[in-house]
Image (cartoon, rainbow, N blue to C red; front, side, top):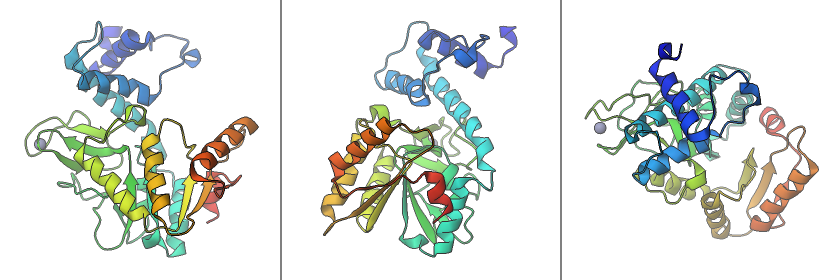
Length: 299
Ligand SMILES: [Zn+2]
């Protein structure tokens, strides 16, 4: 039976078996604890960077496996992109209504394209990613011109396709990730420009470095930082550093609000999170009990 599986499924099956000891063809998958996407892709990226591999895993497979994992991730989010009533879409609508789009800077640590997709529905507004794209694969999503909303994705994006030979980034439609597809200029295989935060040692990719730089410049102009759905994890030192720079650059006291409640959140995790924010950013952080859903629908 396994011989009938398409190549992508066979490769991923072998990968999870060899590296994580998981039989993805097994019957008890509901009980199985899978690695996170960051972990699954992180070990591949580190192996490639160190020119190493794993026992029973050919090094030539590493890039291909990365592509396959990205494709899995893209498939998972694809369904969510078409929901017109999603909270992301509501937030975009309310932003548009407020008439303050040009004063808003959106920073995202997610690679999925949910927020991008929602913002692109605002009439007459383009998404400005802070990247110079070589050329869009298709006219949609449009590149920033005229009225735009700044959206800086600090860990990259599933629709950013990086050509390591040309050192250019191309923009794919939101529904697609860089599948084993190649650069229209030089024929090299694209790699999706995403950098999981867990081993984010330095911003070696020049395009991503530019995004961080633009984010810092733009954030210097804001008067109010609102953290949504972000737990201020210990590991994200680069983000903490960025925020600290913004905060210390500001004349006076920067307003900081946290919106990250959800039903079922334990008292303990609320207290820990509040402590993390206030320990690093000061006791004036307004730590609310508002959820992202409430925030998105009640702008
Ligand atoms: Zn190229």
